[in-house]
Image (cartoon, rainbow, N blue to C red; front, side, top):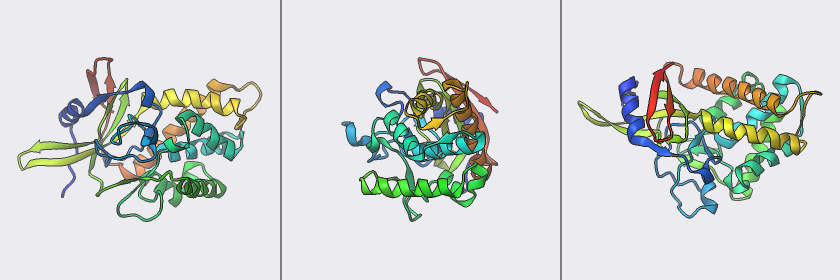
Length: 269
């Protein structure tokens, strides 16, 4: 099936029908930017403490929590401050509310615990491009094995990629990434990559403080939480666009800004 590249009107239709409000108690639980998550994807690891077994986190970031862990390690390499890898992992676990909330994914046609994640797959192929070292990759793979032993398993996404656009979300609403679009040939399945900028920023502000308070990072004299947050934001943008340039370089990017009532404005970047 030929992929449908989405125009602004089609994206607006998808967003209108697929928007949902962010729940305060779930806003720091994450998913990847991958467009194959279904509305009722069963997220085993995240759902362990919640009543409903069918739940899709609003916070969409590259690689979910596995990608965020890689991001912090990359910050240390790129900006030259010291970190304790294990303390970084534990700080992230605290912010997300416990080990069982750690989110990562694979898919139905890749082996391994996270090889079906395009973002993590690109890190494995070219970790230097993501400002990582071999020891960092080894640490990430070690943590995947640890998570598996603890019963924190990946979400398994189904099917091939059908993403036809990239959405950058701001506000207290989120978007389900899969949609059946009405066409002259009937309804066609479409998907979008989703990055929730507002929630990512909010969580990184809290994570920055936690990393410092836990002694997981040792910054240069005079550098504090605001510096670490800015560093993480810069590196996050680098990681996001590095993966987009590899996996979605021909797709249009749309900024979607929600107000509190769920109304939104869309602009093509």
